[in-house]
Amino acid sequence: MLSRRRKVRIDTERMVLRLPAHSDFRDWSGLRAQSAGFLAPWEPIWAEDHLGRRAFTHRVYWAARAELQGTALPLFLIRREDNALLGAITLDNIRRGPAQSGTLGYWMGQPYARRGYMREAIRAVVHHGFTELDLSRIEAACLPENMASRGVLEKSGFKYEGVAQSYLQINGRWRNHVLYSNLRSDRRGRTDVG
Image 1 (cartoon, rainbow, N blue to C red):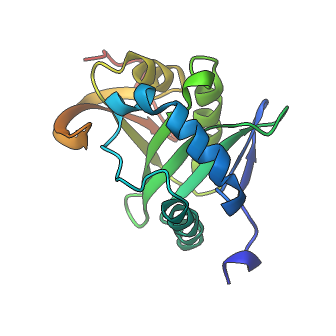
Image 2: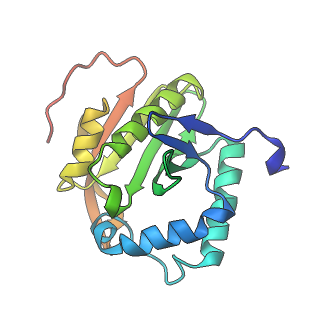
Image 3: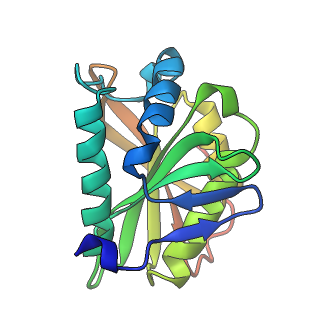
């Protein structure tokens, strides 16, 4: 049933954004392992089997189900020139009805960080969210000291909205996060960053 549906593909200047596939396991686990120290300060603690084949298989099935049900759009960032996996971006917690909103999350492998790939991916996913998924609001959150993440959100049109106390467990601790949003019809202008 999942294979009959048209697969989501978003093309950017340098990348293809697509759902994860079982064949991505080695590239994904290798990039995550190589980038573990780089990602650890910004992510929840990984489960013992985080890099295992079984956990990845569950991730692939979850991605297909979530996309089919319209609750999330989990995408891998694949560089067009050499098919390298660069990272991932997910438009998650998609809410319908009066909310018409979703939450953006992402990670980039250390070798590909600070080269503009994530900004390119965020802009493409936000455009897709507004035009194809008919969302009105896309939210994102990051740690206050994560200046790279804050910068990419601000350069991608997100506006600072405030601070959420004890928002997520990151690296084993409940942490405050700064909140950002991007609105389909945004008339707010530039906001002060907290």
